[in-house]
Length: 62
Image 1: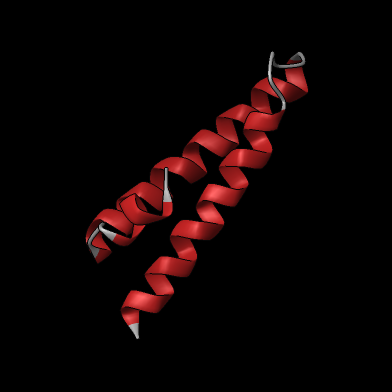
Image 2: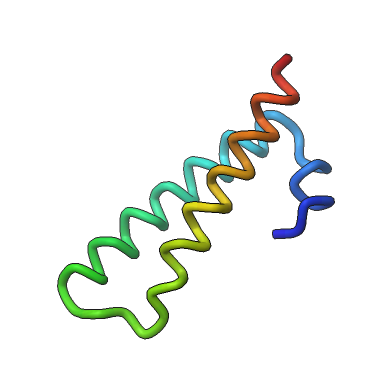
């Protein structure tokens, strides 16, 4: 997601997206532990996306 797309989301949308991405991260880590996934950078990208979403949620909550 691009920064402009993240800034356009509402607080409720941000919370839902964070929950979905955390679930996705959990699944990626589990799959990688069992057998190496094709692109391990997806884990890093997902963590960074969660951080961006959380930062925007904090900014909107203030």
